[in-house]
Length: 88
Image (tube, rainbow, N blue to C red; front, side, top):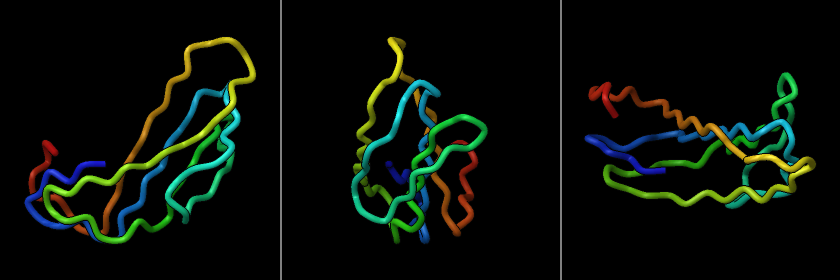
């Protein structure tokens, strides 16, 4: 996760949706939950704290495929702070 600024991102949460043919096993850092939503395995980091402007945070998900396919994912980051730069 990269914060392009201009301000800090407080109460940062990230959700990572994985391919349906994948079983998420673990994630890092701590503070995540694993669940399935409409058949889509999802890893959500519930509170990653504060990420300053220009800050970078690495998140890792370890998963096992159940079928031979290309594994894809969609990640969404949210903060309690509104971003005035809508292009970020």
